[in-house]
Length: 102
Image (tube, one colour):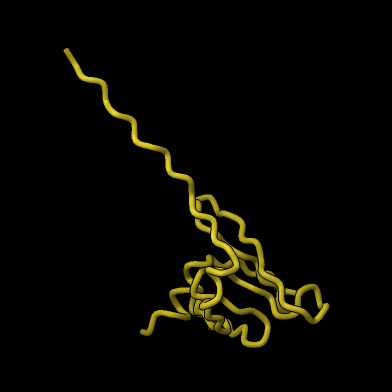
């Protein structure tokens, strides 16, 4: 006679609070894509928690954390607009290029 498997208790995903973000570090974004170097210093920043913010959101002069979308592979990405040109970038590329020394 087969024994019934014990069900694992379901774990709720951890939701970060403001207290978790106290030690968050923000750095300007400089990333290379398709052989081109994109320097977004003074316009956009990325944190070590993977959040991306615009420093001049909708030209209002205040910072705003951007909400990433997911591409077809499931990776979060953001769209930057600089001088009328739009570029898509994956968030993990920003974090890697900014916080991992090469």
